[in-house]
Image 1 (cartoon, rainbow, N blue to C red):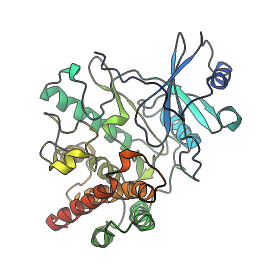
Image 2: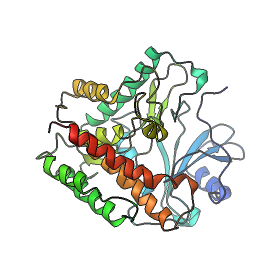
Image 3: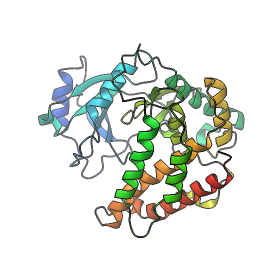
Length: 354
């Protein structure tokens, strides 16, 4: 059984005009041979990701969801330009081969990048890998090391000063997610008032540093080499900006469900962080602190923020489901999930020494 992450048939409603794509790509990528075929990668509630296969080359095409044109969301041009700027200083970014801003081709901006063939760790590692706890730990620390390397990128040297506002990031995130959570409130869910008050009271005076942050750094956004499982790629740069690296780590740990977590949190798991040999959340924080030299003894704030932000994301989706703006059955549990995340925040707050 292959352990390589494979594409599947294109979902109904997500079809590509392959003839238009082929004509566009042949003018920009020399040497493409044969008739192309297209498949789609699973997952991705946001942007759509396709495998466009020629006889001699596989390419990855990324485009926004069909029919959605919300201002500021699904910005393919921004994502592609971030990747192009980062590639020289952060080699795990896939090479962007073409960027199309002519909406007459597909009806939206899109870009095409190289395919990094490898293992993408989703909910569980492929059983065929037969990972020992020691190898799992090695994979885990390698993934964290790639986040550390990103946070150590020289922003000025990479020409990324315009990537985000930088200073004031902590304030903007707390106020921004408070507003978004309130705007998406539904009668069945609580208002996070205690959590918001605590975050406002405990937020640091400033950022620990201003760095490039990914904002969605998870196992299912990395590509591992099939032979030795070293990280060869980091994907999904849509949300990247300049901000506080500890906020970025807090975001990542909100998805980190470990082996001893309660059954409800286990049901939310979408990456193999429960596998024998994986670091616990506290071990991740300690390891990150050792590798960066930044103080992490006040990490409770960033951990609570991560769950608060995740609740905000889930509540926005639940709002659409609650008001029957979407019927996707995958969203049916998002309301209870939001309430669970509030309780998780409150338990952390009660135990915090901040």
